[in-house]
Image (tube, rainbow, N blue to C red; front, side, top):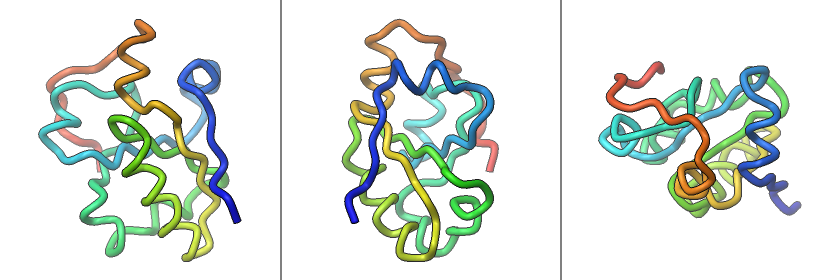
Length: 107
């Protein structure tokens, strides 16, 4: 089954009423993330799939869309329903949407 995707414009219209997981590494997350995003680095997803199951669907973002797509594939094998954010945080920033800098991950 193909992973569903949405654009950053669509994502912006859904916030803050969704669960958004940022799968970039912690240093990337701290350097700028979408407001309200929860940090769960891709390297830890296999051992931390519960947040992906908490709400259906769960939206997943990274820098450009590749890591978040892989996280969605893995999480869906565990029963999650994920939607990948195409273009990722890079497209979010390029679109001029609000970005939070320097906050520690809210895991």
